[in-house]
Amino acid sequence: QVQLVESGGGLVQAGGSLRLACAASGRTFSNYAMGWFRQAPGKEREFVAGISWNGISTYYADSVKGRFTISRDNAKNTVYLQMNSLKPEDTAVYYCAVDRTGWGRKGDYYEYWGQGTQVTVSS
Image (cartoon, rainbow, N blue to C red):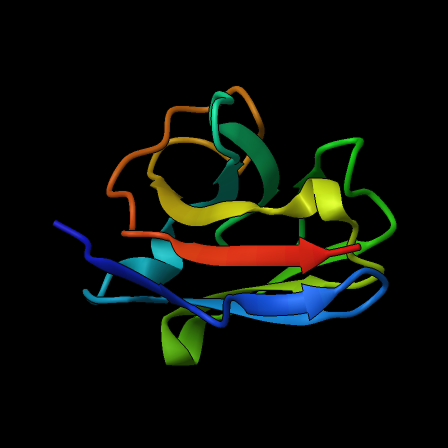
């Protein structure tokens, strides 16, 4: 079992930046790919970014490519999402999740979801 705790959300003006963190429990964090997802009110949860277990491969939704950067520090059992040039449409609850069998791609199977952190971007 892996437990995930997201942090770093908040209220920011359009054009601003936030850095989300997802801290994982368990010794096997470094074995797993990780992903960030988001869910806006009235919308389905969507893939935002993913990263392979070794941090070499990263994947992004088209809507955030060039603005968001996913990274990880396996020594700290933490994965990050640096969000720059934020837009009002980025407003959502952001979740991290574990991809035990894949490489952090959009279509992989994710499990062990965190509780989420709210990101609100004002115009």
